[in-house]
Image 1 (cartoon, rainbow, N blue to C red):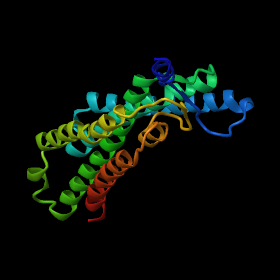
Image 2 (cartoon, one colour):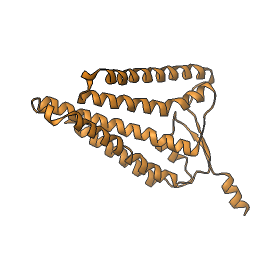
Image 3 (spheres, helix red, strand yellow):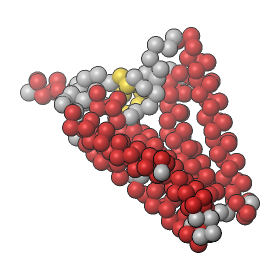
Image 4 (cartoon, rainbow, N blue to C red):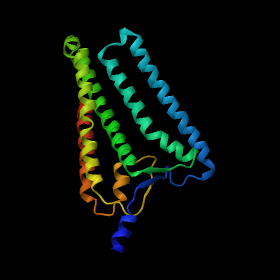
Length: 220
């Protein structure tokens, strides 16, 4: 009975975001200010692209639809990744709940996968524009591009979800220090109190599959 209580008490309920390992405390405020400026710059720059697309109808073309989607993806990625590490250095608040960390990890990999898929669509768009210039307006319409972008936003969730479902079944009962600026697949799996070789193979396999598919389009 006492062993059960000890095990239950040792279950990890939150993690600590280390950020940049080895960074001296005297540089914490400087790092927080730098990351905050980067975050504001990314949000401002991508928001301007969104506003320009909305108010300028001449930009309502397939290529600019891709750029619009990339802007939303960049805003999403930075909003998921940066605020917590900024809080860690500015307010010394590095703790993050287990399920919040899992959710952040899900979105980090989601937006990473989404960016790869959008770049693949951009490569396809440029391929059609260069190799089939006369047929391009027929092959790549706004409707076709919206369907491709919508498909990428939906399917980008598949790989991170499979990986997260593998991780959520793992026991976490010991270390809780994530030596990263955010929660990601490898950092969380390393802290599990079990053999994670299968989970790592699945994660790496999914990542390589996404990169392989994207690189085929980019190289060709």
